[in-house]
Image (cartoon, rainbow, N blue to C red; front, side, top):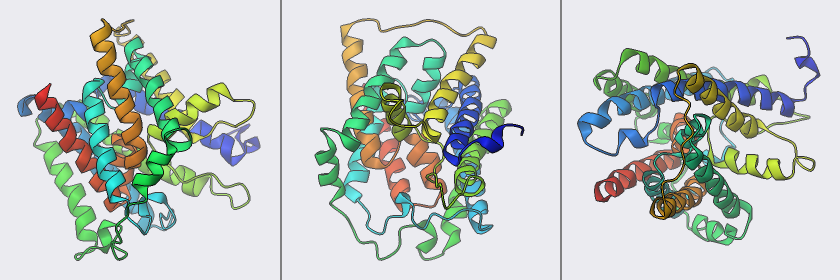
Length: 335
């Protein structure tokens, strides 16, 4: 397109993130896409939402594995496939994130969508989430992250599902199982269609950053949908834009909020809402802190470690997603 040839790979990645985020924001707002809705409450109420999320996972796995088999992208040096498995950080982080998303009323991606719909409570939670996440990555809480991440397990090279006995049966079997859950969930066909497109955004992100924008002289990180790092980076860029450039994650975060705002406004659902009192404020802030802490330790949120991470076949991502789901289900039963 005219004008885009003058963009650097980093600048183009911002545009890519903005586009993918806008599509995600529209679809997630209309379908109420969120893993928390799939886990908290009676199973009869959760199952349709779980079906939409499961179909997104199935398409994310299929698309990512297809792109990998085609030789377009490789995850050999990606953090999801690190040779040593930080099992304590992954499991503890997943459990903390799962509890946090129950306390705060949604996972990080859902809160970004709600922010675009006029929910000031979600906006405040996102700010606290981003502050705590950045503190865990590079701030005062970084020693905690380093200590937990230092407890590793040597899996003997089996860091991906395809390395297990049976090879690709595990990866494609997981995708097939997720698809079966989706089509037996009773979810509305239009919501399933939206979930399918959300799932396909994951390989589009991988291929966009790892193949289309690949430049050995001006590299951009291989990344896809996720909200822990992007929200923290967006917060830091907001405060220091003259010193650091925006990246894919900054565009993604902005795109989700903008897409949700457009979708909610067009549907007549944009409403200004806020916190109801000190008790609710304390609960939501605690949830934000747990999600910020857990998201960094687990390697991402329900989208970053869940959809994007599991799509790579990473065993660490599978463990993180499992810990999030179990924790959310248990904590939800006690609230």
